[in-house]
Amino acid sequence: MHDSAHNHLTFADVTAGDELPELVHDVSATTVILGALASRDWRPMHHDRDFAQQRNGTRDIFMNTPNQAAWLERYITDWAGPKARIGRYKFRMGEPVCPGDRMTFTGRVESTDIDDLGCGWVALDVSLVVANVAKTRFTARVALPVDAQDNPWARGAARWRP
Amino acid sequence: MPKKSSIASLWCSLRLIVKTMCDADDFTIGLDEALSWIDVERHAVTGEFEVERGYFYTTCAAVQNGNPIYWDDAAAEAITDGPTAPLTMLSAWFRPHYWVPGRDTIPLPWQTHFDLKETLALPEAVATDSEVVFGEPIRPGDRINSVETLRSLSEVKSTKLGRGRFWVIDCVCRNQRGDWVGTETMTGFGYRKG
Image (tube, rainbow over all chains, first blue to last red):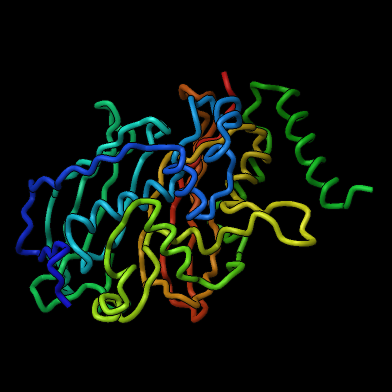
């Protein structure tokens, strides 16, 4: 399966220092609430502005953790393609992302390596930026096919060391 | 006549308020009990429903994720050997329903986070860091089991939010066959304002 509508990066296509294309999205209340409910997060600070302002001291409702992760997943696979398999990610949320924010994802390849099981890995640094302020910083370790025949998703537990 | 669980919930809230009012500078409240939880498995939970594709679409729609492995069965078959859940939905599969008939209180995911708030008399708490490592893909029909472990509890720290403690909690997730599907690690900060 190799469609032309999506990227299909292989390990050889990627070099440390490569920049990922930016992704820009205007955050609305729908962005925040839909993302929270899709992740089954019913906490009121993600849908109730009064609660968010009075209890959390934020200016509005704000994006929840799994929704930020889902945006990260989309950002990575938009760039790398459907065979890219995320092994791990980590992020720190500095300031909340609220309706009215224009968020921009930027990313960079920090390093690449092939592990002793033959799996090709790229380490990414990604930032979610609003008005030139990095609100959330992510790191991710992502497996890419080492060649056109390889598929990281085909690796079972014994050959998968994220 | 309020039910027992409602009274218990009210009692917990009152206890937290009283504890906090008693001595706003006492950060040793409940400390020994909380420390005893470190490296001990707690709150084993079985997801309340089977993993289902409706949520896959809603999650992808929420972030406009057009990855064909989530939308196109042929692509899913070719690449992931059939449909799989978006990876970052891991926690969705063990979060409880908002309401269930006959249940008076809403159970909370990351219950250890809320236990720490109450035991340490820290009325507010936020998640600051999240780390997830992924194992076997999660597929429609799976039932996800999770168990939490408190890994660390910090000294008292001051931040712009207030004074309190940071904690790190692991949540290890397995499917119904016992295969490891992922581990989520959450760093929380429980605090008193001001």
